[in-house]
Amino acid sequence: MDISTDQALTILQEGEMTLKGEFLWGSNYTFLIEATSQGISLAGVYKPVRGERPLWDFPSASLAHREVAAFIVSQAAGWNFVPATVYRRKAPLGPGSVQLYVDHDSDYHYFNFTQEDVQRLRPVVLFDLLINNADRKGSHVMIGPDQRIWLIDHGVCFHAEDKLRTVIWDFVGQPIPDELCAHLAALLEKMQPIKPEPSPLAKALLEHLSQAELRAMIRRGEKLLAAGQFPSPDPARRPYPWPQI
Image 1 (spheres, rainbow, N blue to C red):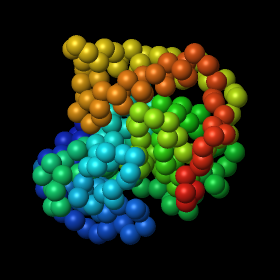
Image 2: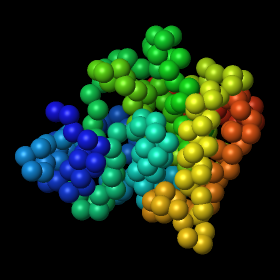
Image 3: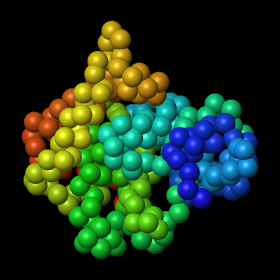
Image 4: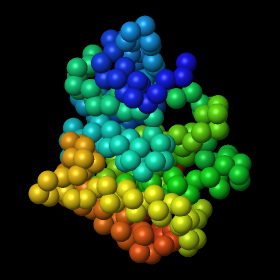
């Protein structure tokens, strides 16, 4: 069934929600759900706040909000990588993020992508650099039946300090394509100002991130535009997530 992103957001936010199962391989409690509204049912991935494992370097009860912020940034940039995601306050196990489940072949991931698919990942890398993704595993990049790229698991992004950990370092030193630079520049303009009266995009993001985190993202974007090329891993810190898949 083809439905718009806005329809999916409404159903995930307001539909009757039923737990269907639990994903057992993640660090945090994650559930498969079904959300139904006006005769339309959608499968979703529900991450309740109460199931988040505490982290020393991220504020408690913030991971679900970061999932939503990643969706907002992806949409605002026009990249549309992240499935429809909402922060739902009324849910079976309490508040949390609910994301549209995307059909994909779980056996096909970054580590066995064709070279043609790897070459499609430049905007993915730019997105991760911008949001400071601390956990881009190989299985977090998926390709749907229509060959569309999807990105999931953004609970540990947007930290104000450098936390980038990713398996995708294929484009180090290469120029960022002009089209992607244009998308990034337009996105940064939409984020300004933060104070005294936030822009609509900044206001939406500040429902899920702190002002310091939003300012840091803007600085990262400006730095990327000024450099004009994909950076190298920082030799002073671990640049890869674990496990990598």
